[in-house]
Image (cartoon, rainbow, N blue to C red):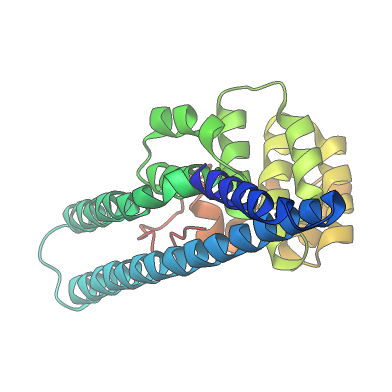
Length: 265
């Protein structure tokens, strides 16, 4: 992109200027140093611009969450209709908020020409919002254009592979899951073990949950492992992970909910 092009042109100019009075080896060193410095300066400016945009997005997301929470509190204390009608109202408001977030991602567009990865990073944020809107066809179309680096987007891709009966699901999980540790590893392992149980691959699910011990320590994962070891497959449940689990939309919660923990990377 433009960052590399400008760095390259600047280094060539520096080499041309220094060529007449310096040994060739010194000229090459000068060109390399100038290239690196220019690239670093432009990258720093891009990071600063990206940070400002991210701060705007975070502020907007907080505003949306606070508005949804206020609406929910009002409905709980002063109901104005049936529970189904109130939930539909909240869902419409959430959809509008997510539309607003997707539209706000256009703030990154001027930065695309400066970075190879910027558009893919923004695609990943867009994909997460589309997933929360249940626009799964758009999610599937966008996934190949994303850069999957965080546990949330990795798990969303895992869910879509499961829903689409992708034969590469196991390989994808084993390749990607090992990079996450601590709290970040919980949802990927919870989702994958759930999928294995649904496929009646109980031994594989036990192995996955055993492997999870190397990455994280979590009561829900450990309890599920013990249940499977004792043959209590029907008691397997990720419900204690609450919104973090139900946000994947693999299961519906018993009680109505509002998705308020939508995040972007």
